[in-house]
Length: 115
Length: 114
View (cartoon, each protein chain N blue to C red):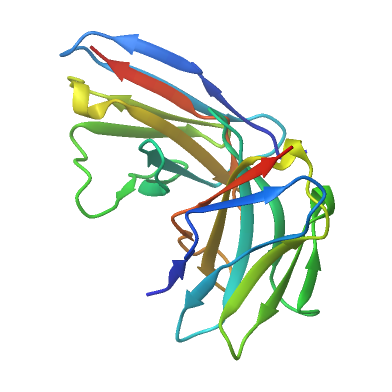
């Protein structure tokens, strides 16, 4: 149990376009979902926390207008990278947590390459 | 705020030898501690976690870790490694008592040498 999926697993896009990444909790209801960014050979950096039905809380330094997060249901959160540029190329990982949780369950990640 | 330090960025070890990956944390209040493994181009998999109780925690794939409050450490150990253990290992900490933000260490690359 506690499986989290991400789609797509990898995406290549042109500079200036927008890309949407989906994060789904497959077998549980996720009251809270998290989005992380990981540069090569570096650790995970939390970008934002989202609770179902409310606005996401962004970490300091993360542009909320560039990284749009929507937590539309208890099983789905989306991250949209708007007007992507090469510096946005990275590995994006989501995680999900149940209510009253003490553990996050991670998705397999999405590799974004912006040309 | 809490923080995590993984002093070793890379640890080479021969197959079937024991290994210890070090993790130290900093927090003024009680914490939960986690070890995750990440294989190339994949997400994170939980190896083990300490929430409370016994300070020796056993996880998957033969790994174990010991919570040492006085030394603020949570080192990961395995008595005999396999080639398949080659991966990146992340220590993580969160404040105890329900949802709190997770802080990750910088990771340790375990390289098992045949």
